[in-house]
Length: 319
Image (cartoon, rainbow, N blue to C red; front, top):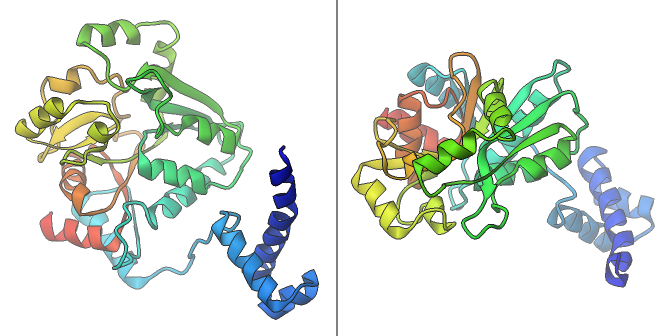
């Protein structure tokens, strides 16, 4: 640890104490100041530092009536096995705010089960934000498996693949997919999937008890394109074919049907686990993703959804 890190640690320790006293123990800032032997202004700054450094993660446990109503209507309309709706911030353009925290809470709830389970993970910005919200938990009885490859086109680790962060947070046995997200040909995909080190991971993914995925849009700012997995020409070809969304790379149209050929012939991801025997939860929100979310729900590509009020309201109006 360098000198700067060493100098900053005592202050982070104080911030953690202040954050705990304020958010968990319910102390006022005056009480915190007295207990830590600092001024009220210093106590206030320490509490703010605890939040800004991510030492404090706030989750709202009080159910909001409109959110509960929207979740019940989504469940009924789309025959979902799980629906959770979080409040919307009308001034925020974030695609993860609220649902990342709710997804983290749902992941933690599942991992606290004593019975061993297989949890499968997709990839993307929303899941990455959710995993960053997880509290450390020792659940070595479970297995965590990646549905998608963790290698970017340039050979580096895919930035939004979350399997290693998840394993670090949970101490669960992890099974990454050491493949590119999209390979060069269908023949290469078949060859790679037949490898002895890949086949067990694919089989484990198919047996997942619960799965968490994101839904990527295929508009001009499609994550697959922005992150370098497909070219502009490939994106335009998918759009021309009617693609509106993708889950772990699998592109689908407005009816939720997988696009024939194109990049789907080269996606190295595992197929989504069966929605008949397991729970596949999508965490997604926002106007850009709306066509993809609606298609995924309509075709039952997923049977669970974590979203926000605005998206839920739009889905019910369109569905």
